[in-house]
Image (tube, rainbow, N blue to C red):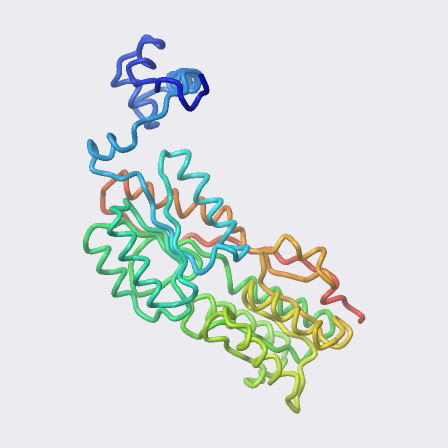
Length: 346
């Protein structure tokens, strides 16, 4: 008989084998603070041996929880969000929660639809990175008023009090721009997302601060916005064309998101613009392919896995504690990786 067809072990089976009460076994499996680490290990080992899995449906009815978490991201094929989801899943699985992932494709209407669908599934909590089109938080405030725990990550809103998990976008952009300046570039353009997005303002601030501290005059014509976060390649193509065809052509471009960065690299290569000889390129991207792109791409990396894990820990803490608490904003540092696309002394 295969493992899938074996008779399911019960909580009582685990209790009988360990010599503990059902109550103690149940608390140990829920990682209760009332149970010692030694007992938790005994129970976990026995449950594994017996192939015991909790009946989540029954538990949901008993405790009034679905043991599920809604996750809203722009696109799961974005390397950063894929890493965030891995972090979310690692903590959720450990704590006995399943996750339901929805994509907004940078559409505010899709975001509203996702939230309606997730709420109808009786999720216990919500993890969300708002779209580049989102300008208010009324839909989130409504869910919060209904008692739904919410944690925002990456792209957040200052219009709602909640736990927030973000990268240090200002310092990341500042370090990137400083590197370009130190590499000899002086006409540094910036292609970024929608002006509505929190990350846009933070990264733009870091870019401007670096120019200011190095006494380089800011050229507003060198700042280009992609209203849909680069989801539409045409808006990146248009922004880049305006920069390259201007009377004050930049000698480097600093890009502010995964999609904008990799699409810009592809467009420059298609137009046979030599990188870094004719134009330096550095951008925010979490792609693991940065080292093998042509040329290898200098990048600002965000700790996506760690951000996802932390956001989930905060959310489950809210779900299970059910008490009013002070909300915190957790800021993770970024990392700057220097590769050939900004090679000094080009």
